[in-house]
Amino acid sequence: MNTRFLAPLILITFLSAVPTPAEITPPPSFTLDSEPTENFIVCIDPGHQQRGDFHDEPIAPGSAIQKARVSAGTSGIGTKKAEHTVNLEASLILRDMLQEEGFTVIMTREVADVNISNSERALISNQANADLTIKIHCDSIANDSKTGATILTPSDTSSYTQAIYPESQQFAECLQSALSANGIKVNGIIKRNDMTGFNWSTVPVIILEMGFMSNWTEDQLLSTPEYQQKLMGAVVTAIKTYHNQHQNTL
Ligand SMILES: [Zn+2]
Image (cartoon, rainbow, N blue to C red; front, top):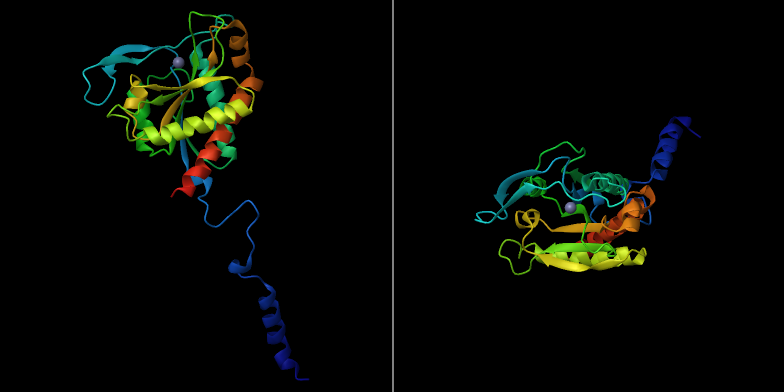
């Protein structure tokens, strides 16, 4: 046999054994028509800040009604811990969990000592064109026996938020299911037309009131990393469900 032809023959045989990109089978979790999670932007707004700013701002674009730019929030009945601290602790857990899942995360704040009003927080998520904004808070009420999480959504009748209501409500329902499935009591989904952070938002937005700092037991619970992880794990599940639902309707 003429060996001059052997080397190119071996090379051709070798090249034909290398799979072309089209022949590579995608891993089971990946489907070609799904939007990668990194294209889905979640804005997390840890409620309040170290010091409230009681200068006023309009509660909606062009509104004559004014509210404090940002309040200091509540504090724990037993822990005496500031709400803005608990909100940030949980938000940083949520940020890390979402980044682990490949989502793009925008934070309105990552420290306590800032001065960002509620309308300015909305503008951060608007400018980022976030797919979803989640505002993390804790509740407080005079009745110290009340416990559980509550989800707030924008109003469906206000002209400021009608456009973002359907998707905000869709996510709120995902979140209610995920929290309940994790054994976390949910008091309900409540529409609000008086929240500056909702009225300035052009992207779907909800507030998660994680629980009541006015209840002795829940106040302690809200400060434990385990409970914060449980709550934020449910938020991640809800975001993944919403993300899947959303791309099915594209
Ligand atoms: Zn709050």
